Amino acid sequence: MARQEEYTPPKVWTWDKENGGEWASLNRPIAGATHEKALPVGDHPFQLYSLGTPNGVKVTVLFEELLEAGFSDAEYDAWLIRIGDGDQFGSGFVDVNPNSKIPALMDRSGSEPVRVFESVAIMMHLAEKFGAFMGPDKARPELLSWLMWQMGSAPFLGGGFGHFYAYAPYPMEYPINRYAMESKRQMDVLDKHLSENEWMAGGEYTIADMAIWPWYGRMVTEGGYNASEFLSVHEYTHLTRWAEAILARPGVQRGRMVNRTSGEPHEQLWERHSAEDFATKTQDKIGG
Image (cartoon, rainbow, N blue to C red; front, top):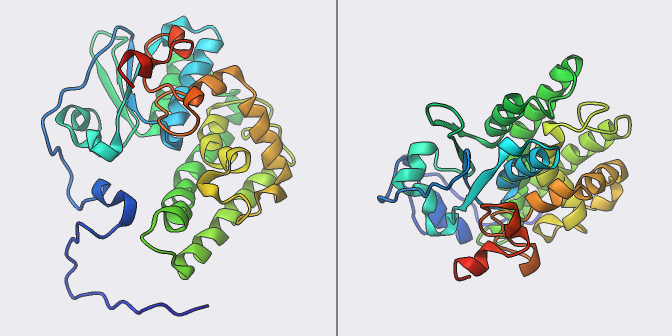
């Protein structure tokens, strides 16, 4: 391994605002709002504030799957939070999610509004509320195990491999190798499990599948971080079978579009306020 310039940590760490590459402006060592900005509120029971990153896609896929399954009370407004512009540090957003990360949800379906933050917490809240996509009771431990697995594992794929491979200021051999190894190990875990199971929690499609797919399914079907060849994702045939089956679902196809601001224009729906928005893109209505 080529040795790069050594770094000696200072006795006391200080924040270098310019250090961090493309996403340096998103990271800071303090919490809280940086500016006053109220959040918009639409007409539906659920108000989602998000962006079409993998964590955001989890929730919009679930909403669209609920609607596809006939749960009309799951209608929602999806408002675009541009993290590159610092929308997540606005006072209204911080009130909903003090951690300043997307997605964040205000559930206004009851007598009092309820905030829910963290993607899997939102998914469990909605799935339990509607009694859907939680699988049979006997499979609940398996479902919860895979949900927790995803929460602990995906940061190594995204914030680890994805960051150093695609977004760091310059290529660094050691972290890329370290996180590539771990990302491949994780995909092998999934591939081996899916060689014996149709879905993550066994015989039924659940929120465990919806939570894992935007991270790992999209790696093998859409080439996340432009790293398909580098990570040899074609090796994971069972993971690919599962990922393609999920991608073929109408609810998933709609959900992956919501709050998306990159990729092909026809795959982007910046905001979603009704089912009709998929035909007439919201960005056309808001001057995009």
